[in-house]
Length: 178
Image (tube, rainbow, N blue to C red):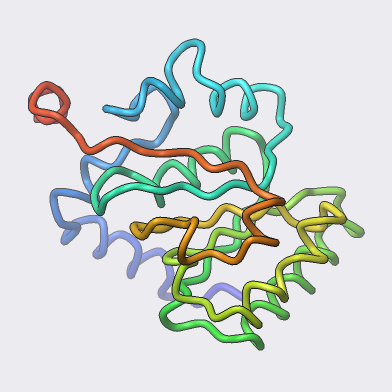
């Protein structure tokens, strides 16, 4: 339910947004430094264009656009996006997100991307909770991590996901942004 003040809050947040938020890409074409994934022939662009996202892990240093890429992929492919942070979310939060995704699929036929930031921080039991939903297609999992997922994400979840490596932004990329 929307509050009477939601629009005012959102407007004030936009006015006070940090530079990084103001520069945040809104479309695949605006993403800088990840052409190998979202360029004209990029594999993630193709998945979004045919609206057939698959579960994936986005691995790269901080500031490479993992969260932004997940949001843009979901919206470009017409999926609803549920976002959780492994730092502040627990099993209850995951279960609730999975329930909402199932209801959304049943009621509106809309698929859900479950984006989990810092997925490497979930323990084995929390990661295992995601397995049935990713296997059945109830959700498309997009996990973001700065840590090597081969050591930090359990093998069962890795086997159900495609790993995509994001590169650090180079000097040319930063010039483009400025």
